[in-house]
Image 1 (tube, rainbow, N blue to C red):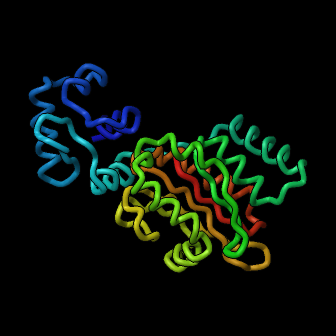
Image 2: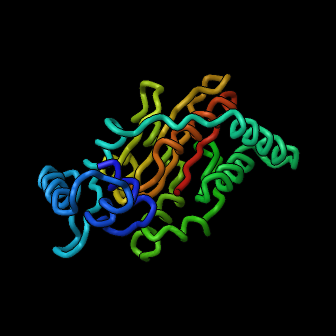
Image 3: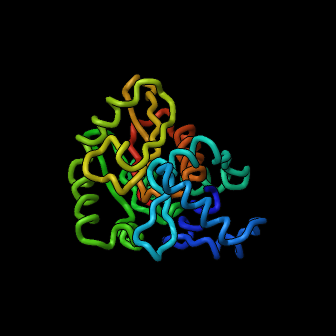
Length: 235
């Protein structure tokens, strides 16, 4: 399961037994791998777009990967220092904090970032979003564009579902934002010094790097703990 997720995340094409056997050093024949993948498909963890294709992880498959297989990906000390330095550099340009944060996270993720409070949001990096094959179709991009048009309302919806203060991952149809079931979200709420609620949320294709995104989100949250911002970026 882990190899299928890893390969699909990298290549964005259905994964076949041959590539798994050759690339990942699995000590079993392609025929055995095919049988195992067929069982995973019957159990709802993978699906096959058509008869001659390989397999793609389902929402259930990604959920299993996140909860049972994925290991933490803490930022290294060097990455933490670089992130802090870049944030300070951008802040020195006297831009508002939400804009600075959006620009920084966009550069780190190669993704679209929306940042701001419920009544003060901005976005950065839409061209990066369009490079993801999942959003090249007009219908899928329109769904994401609608998300951008209703950021304030969506922030309120997210906050209403985040009552325990913990970072959560929403996959596909679990998504608290309507009409973007082809996306996943990594979300972490927090309270500012004044007690006002804020949220950090990463939104991207279901093949996103969940461990890395979670670590980025939680570290930025620590840096900006006294600020009221929203961060939503697609990777």
